Image 1 (tube, rainbow, N blue to C red):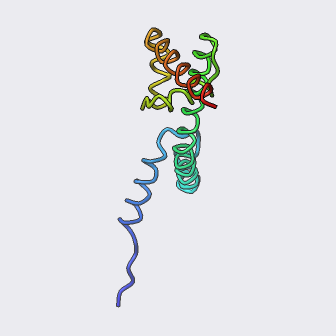
Image 2 (tube, rainbow, N blue to C red; image 1 turned 180 degrees about the horizontal axis):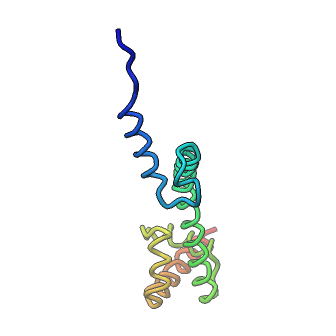
Image 3 (cartoon, rainbow, N blue to C red; image 1 turned 120 degrees about the vertical axis):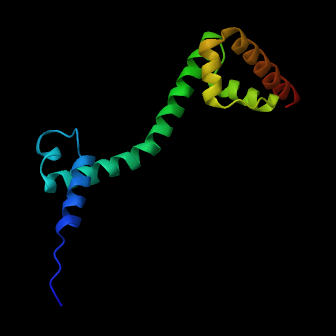
Length: 124
C-alpha cells in the first residue's frame, strides 16, 4: 500500500488558519505555529468575553438608572421594588434607555414606583 502524504490537505489547513490570524501583530499572523496559538487564545477570549459583555452591560444599566433615581431623590433599590410591585414589565436595559431619552416618562415611573412602595410600607 503506498504511503499517503497530506500534501494539499495540510496546505489548505494552514491557509485556513493563517486567514483566521490575519490582522494579528507580527509573527502571530505570518508563522503557522505562532498563528495557531494566537487563534486558539483569541477564541478562548471571545468565548469568555461573550459572557462578560452581558455582566458589563447590566452593571452599566444599573449605574444609569441609579443616577437617574438620585436626580429624583429616590434610591435604586426602592425604585426597582416599587416598579416590580406596580407590575411594570420593563427590564433594566429599557429603564436605562427611558431615563436617558425620555425623562418625563421616567418621572412618571418614579412617581408610580414611590406610590406602590409607600402603599406597601403603609400596610406593614
